[in-house]
Length: 139
Image (cartoon, rainbow, N blue to C red; front, side, top):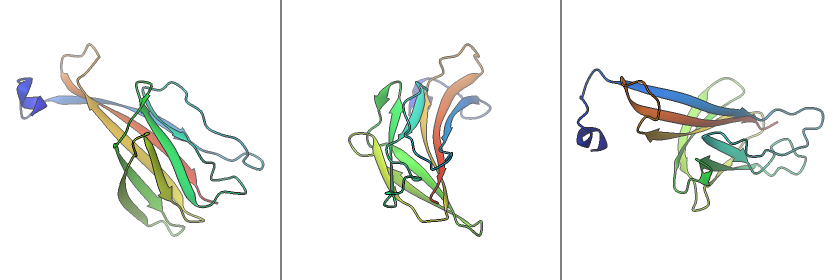
């Protein structure tokens, strides 16, 4: 409906996109914590999967333009040790927090997308998508 109300064509239009990505990497014993970096959209890990007391539930808070994103769709890619990938969908809660159960030895990528009218100067681009992503492993 937004597309049509802006009088945009149904075909032959362009989208611009940016990715705002973080990877959690353990150095030494893996101690540490994530923080906001000021990206246009970003996940902030609230739990550390490398912490000795990690209980298998990863929590991350999703931001867009400096504020939390409640009830946002989050896509979860879970890669098994053998390489197969399972994709599922979750939603953030009222505080913009998503919680997912993880399995030892599996790799994870979570992402969330913002679709907005473009803020750039290219008249050919009619939509912008901003991808927030966070990758990590459950050791």
